[in-house]
Amino acid sequence: MVILDHEHKTTEWRPFIDSSKTSLKDVVLQNGKKYPSVPLVYATNMKQIYDNLKILLEKIQYDKYCWTICLRFKKI
Image (cartoon, rainbow, N blue to C red; front, side):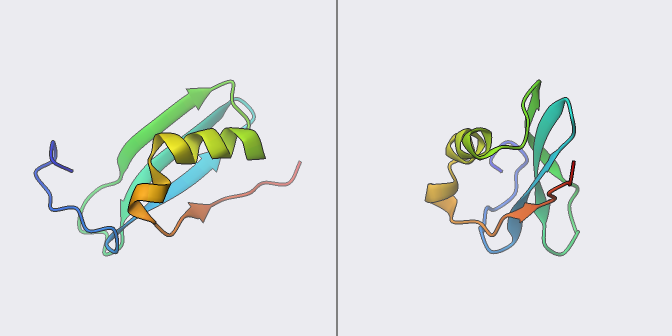
């Protein structure tokens, strides 16, 4: 947020995690849609399984920010 010159309020932003067969993506969405999404992670060859999600949450410092997370789980 410092780089984007925005004040960071965890109540105004939420991470969105999505995956496909070949990648795992994470972006931060602004609740009011005033600002565009901010990409955080794009990991190829990484599936949406517990261990990978745990690593992803550690990398985006979920414990520090206590965001509400949006996920899109897919059925195979």
